[in-house]
Length: 399
Image 1 (cartoon, rainbow, N blue to C red):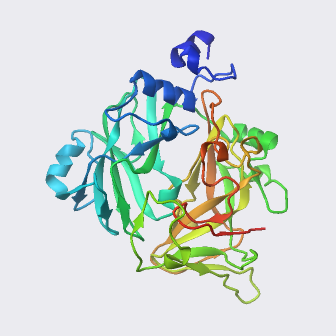
Image 2: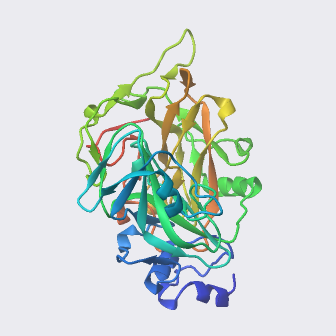
């Protein structure tokens, strides 16, 4: 990117310290802030707080009303979300004073933020990490949308969150943040050859023995595996959601006792086998990766599940990592990825070291002016097997 092109994207007061720019990639924090301050691509009638701005993403806020709907839906190219709500809405719920969204129900909530994207600019969304760890299925839809969590180039209009709690009913209110947004310029391609080169330079994942996976583990992304060794000091290999619990307020931090909502999962020892964890059908589990993950300051990463032919389970609802996650520069030394896992149909044995997903890295246009970590109040730097931030601290030490 030329200096002239960069100056169009970044007001001079917002220019990053680095003078290196890419022509395509995700917007860094300073560009998100500039778009908000100028009221161009990102708009809201309620002022957007600086604490909503993450290194390469923006936290989105729930609006004043939730619509209980009969079924999940996509509007399709010829309809708006409002059109679908007229057909599928059962009743409205006032969120201004807080309201319970019950598990196994589906809700549509207009968000406070709107978009007015330009040519070659699109957006992506995902649940916030803490929301995924509560087993809340949360995704973003738009008018004339044909995909979840994908916002087409040049889209101008409102944003909506589809919310479906699966394990726990939740208490949410106007301003609660369940989903986050990334904005992308162009269509950057980051092929496996570039990923191998970055892995050789940085060490994107590190095994417990201190080594790096071989380059051949990079194929359509960087493979990662699960730690169900049970070698933590307390012998816990993971957590399983209890079936009948109280409601969880999504805005309360460090409030709940883990024992009221989770039961520990211990290793299943087979006959001479390496052991593992048997996933019960339709139950929800929190596990951790065997590898420590690093996201360099000018990259972001997304965790994608392996295809279903590797097993009858789903991995990860909220698989996005901001720049600086696990990075020494941001106060980390490699952080484990927490895996949100749900089995389907039949019990399934997950063994220690089994590959469960891939990490896909994507460059930013420029290095952000803030990195993931304690300096901006990030919750999961240096994490191991960690529950969401809503629970009192309990973190097993994984070796």
